[in-house]
Image (cartoon, rainbow, N blue to C red; front, side, top):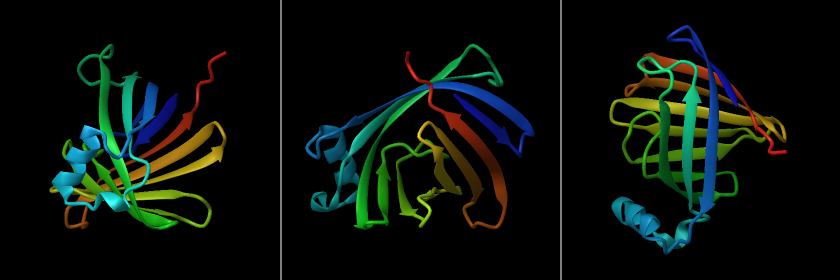
Length: 161
């Protein structure tokens, strides 16, 4: 369950999401294809995975009953224990392949930065407790001179009983 506030649209949003994360083998055809397209050394990757999601929002501009969904392959390439690159078959801010940089701050916050053709996205994710995480994002122009969108979300893991 996610509650978010988009400053640009002055809109609160409630979302129910189903997220599935599945570890992939480095030899998986999707991983191999992503590595080949980025010329990344397969010996440097660590723990590739696929993420699938579907979400229902109370704020869908066209059809409130519409369910958004998708999937992407993610391949971490650590530079050291606290930072590296993340290869993504589909980006967050733009629907194109992306190479992000990531780092962990001393308090455990995960920071992910991605340059796209038309924009730059920075996401920060931190855990308040085992079942509550917070996420903020800032989307800027590709030159970084103007903010296009900001958002904050608190997310609660829904436990199956």
